[in-house]
Amino acid sequence: MKHTWRRAVGAALTSLTGLAALLIVALLAVILLDVVRGGAGHLTWKFLSEPPSDGMMGGGIFPALYGTAALTLLMTLAVMPVGVLTAVYLHEYAPPGSLLARAVRVAVVNLAGVPSIVFGLFGVGFFIHFVGGNMDRLLGYQELHWGQPGILWASLTLAVLTLPVVIVSTEEALKAVPMDHRTASLALGATQSQTLVRVVLPGALPGILTGAVLAISRGAGEVAPILFTGAAYFLPDLPRSMNSQFMHLGYHSYVLATQSPDVEATRPLLYATVLVLLALTFALNLVAVLIRARTRRRAAAAH
Image (cartoon, rainbow, N blue to C red; front, side):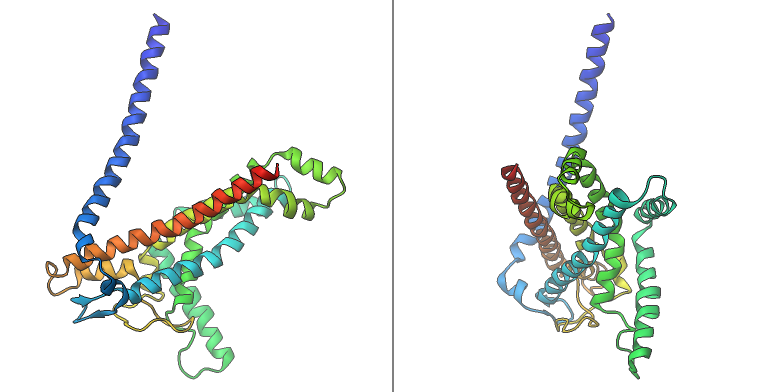
């Protein structure tokens, strides 16, 4: 009787987990089908290569596409070194019971739970007014140069937003490297830093790249943090310097959906813009996944 009951409970749990997974896949499929159906017909080379026109009632999205790609690239370059080095300290160098390591972990957990709009306000107060304003005073600018919204401050704000993702995934990847590898390297005479560079980090690289994938996924679609730190309502010119404002696909979608004088007329543009944003995010993720897979194959071949 007890064995039959356990089998029934196991079958019920298996069914529930399968239904939950199926529901997630179905929701994603519905969203993608709706976006593709609404935007595929308007997705042309002209739409991708031209700036908006006629008060954003026509034209294309090239400035927004370029700005989104540049912002995501700068964010990744900013967050990955800091996140990886922080995780390396926490797992490899911090002594057991370290108060500093404990404080860093608490800060990471709290950062992960902060709403994204708060990061935008932080970016305005810290990066633009404090860092940028002091840079203008030190460099002798009479007008605002660094102390204004720009793509550099927006990318750094997103880097702070995605920092917990990189730290947690990197630390988990470091934990997955067997301790025997470290011990063997040290026994052969390598220093701790040499062991880290030649043994630990190569073994943890696939997990580190997983953190990069998650950071790109999170940062590419965020809009709230960049509303105050660099995104422009309408800017047909491409950003030419780090302090230039830029257009963003996510913000452009919001503008088309809420600020257009004729929402129905701009609906095809809206769907096509969302489709491009999803495609760009998937493409960035795909590149990171391919790099991770290639790294894993090389690591397996080396062993």
